[in-house]
Length: 275
Image (cartoon, rainbow, N blue to C red; front, side, top):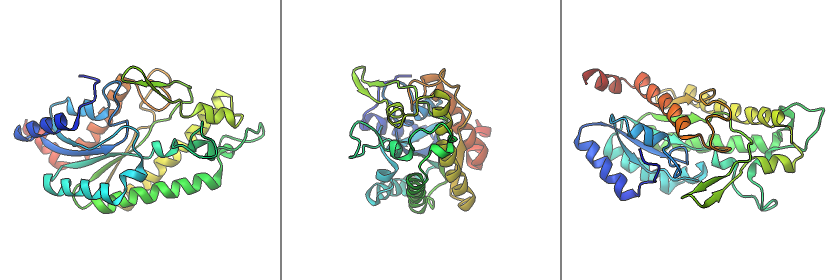
């Protein structure tokens, strides 16, 4: 499986080939967990199983804010209406925590969600409640827009991320374009230097994002399939950098996606039983 990103034309050719072969159809939209140039990602691994024909729209670095725009949702909805996929795979929300901010040009949005270090405070108390509550509301509204626009066409598979790491590791796209780190500089600027505390704060944030998605599945049971990825990746070993798994790590995550599709979608079960 190649780690080179496919161009849209090649992706469309592959999808057309999979359709002719009668494979189950999926539509995918998302961020770098679905489109990670350095090596195979979730959708690459899923596509490589030879079970699915996947119409792909994802773009590395994309945000939920952008994906939930009227123009983008209209594009995805038009495709879903035409292609009639078994499910719509959606990966979003992570990059919204790492957008640029004008008051701290060298840092990312997560800096706003952190309070200055205080030895007397818990990890949860190091999270700026006002900024974080505002962001959580923003995320929930974005996902609700996605569900409202796409949920009538197919179940939407949403995932919460596993526990990110403040490792300070960068990533090089195409072997030379550096990006990151996204987390460690913001924590250090707030005086949060203890690795255990850094990880505990990230657990608070990731748990909260997962709680939003789990609640959406409860509220919209016919439209949402929530995949809980926490605990899938081994700390350090399965992470290439602060926010991206290794190739094997992405494969582990893909297996959770595959299991969710098989377990939650009767049509997918029927197809697999017939082969």
